[in-house]
Length: 189
Picture (cartoon, rainbow, N blue to C red):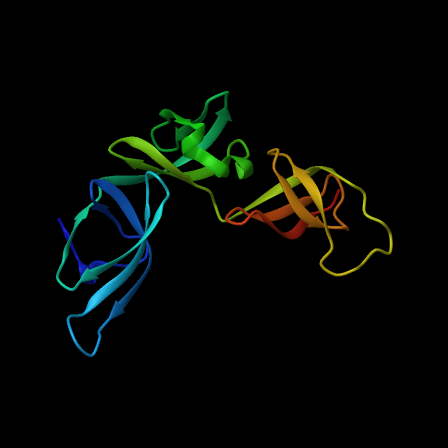
């Protein structure tokens, strides 16, 4: 069933020029002169490229053949990551290029959303926040409380993030997976 421009909303997935896209932002515009249109920012689900385009009112958009599955990350090897469908227990191997930077914040057994296009995995979406243990960082100095001073720290997935000086090895911290930013300490060493 094709979509109409009135169906455009954030997260809508549709086909454009043979590729699947998702809407990031949209704005309905009714100029004083001329026809109304919807200004849209969209992301190509295959390449990750962001595109801006205006759709005239009444234009039709083809529905994308995409499916989102909740899957559990099992393990990674040299060129792929293995995920398991939590409802059917089927395992899927997804290339490292497809997973991209998400690998930095993907501990084993985490549940993620995997996007499939024509039965091919094209993207992995992590939960917005994860909690990870600090495995390596320089010790902070007692009394060094200058504001917004950070130091690098390695988390158990292997990624390096910036944390405040009071964080020590063994602490568990909450991280925003969209930005890689430290949010708070949730457990002490």
